[in-house]
Amino acid sequence: MTICHTLQTAARGSSWTIAAIRRAFSSPALPAGSSAGTLEIRSCRELTPAKFPEYVAATPTNLHNMIWRSPLQNVYVVKKPWNARVRDAMVQFIDHIHHEYAAVNIIVSEDVADELAQEWKGSGRRVVYTGPIGEIVARTDLVVTMGGDGTILRAVSAFSSVGVPPVLSFSMGTLGFLLPFDFSTFKHSFRQVYESRAKALHRHRLECYVKRTDSDTNRALEGVVGPEKVIHAMNDITLHRGSQPHLTSLDIFIDHELLTTTTCDGVVISTPTGSTAYSLSAGGSIAHPLVPCILLTPICPRSLLFRPLVLPVTSHVSVRLSEENRNRLIKLTIDGIAQRSLRPGDEICVSNPEHELVKLELAGAPGIWCVARTENDWTNDINEMLGFNSSFGKV
Image (cartoon, rainbow, N blue to C red; front, side):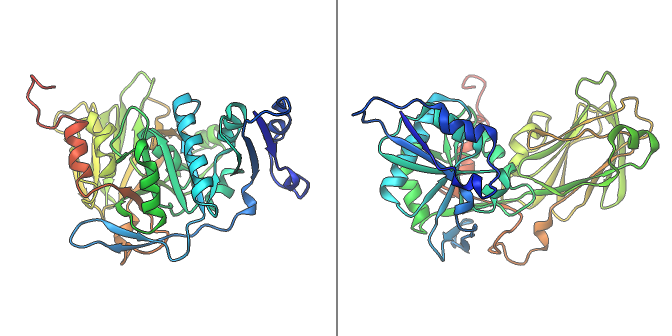
């Protein structure tokens, strides 16, 4: 294996990490005459800014045609970390793109660049681009994921405060509600996207932010007061007591009106896409991804009369950790990623801004466009993944 690294950008003030520089000199050269391929890792600052395709309704279906008005150039590939089978698939994908689409650039995260540098098994001279995640986000035209549903959520989380490029997902993990394509179809699937012949399904995201209390106790504990940045969630926003010994007391507001004060382990606020995740395990309803709604599902409530709710997409949901709470904090996760915990008096505000948009075709819309195989992907998923309405003998 021979690895070539382009580090000229370091001299121009590029934010290369120590790990990136170490990659340049850590791989031993092979003896003369070796036929192993070479991998060149370059800064994504060299690439053009991101551009979005246009989405045009594909009547009579619920899908949209995904049309590139200028050629697709920059593809951000996200993989399940340190998995040999997925890494080999990624190398195969990179080889194919370099061979068939000379104008397309492959972008990977810095940790994946490290992994490829150590384990590269490709053929010929290949180039991938990397850099800090903010620079990657600013240059990504298409996201390709290789793994399970968790890989998609991790990829999309990088775009939590900006518009998300279209997502093409290949199933190589353990869960697959969001994975319409088997990796064996990657050549055909990518060509469909590249040639503007692919169709996409629009999935909603929730917008959320935290209002921190200005109490003296919390100011000393957290050091931060006031609202935090807005984050978008593809699946769900979860409040949970975690390892705290007592049930949590929560004040829940719908459209600024108190719904209830509940004592429970926590709550899940979910998109329709997330309705088959934690919300379902907590007893919530299953919703088709195109249903415009917000799901509010309690986790082990003390009262048996607090049932899961399906709310209009226009609703504003607020959950405040009651001042009388016996626990001093509650865990907050957004799409499975832990955030700063909430303390008594803190409040999380959740809404779906997409209902205010006149056209879903608007570039940078808050939702997520996922490349679809057919209009029936969701129906197939709940039958194959959940065994929907199966008899006990078949489960």
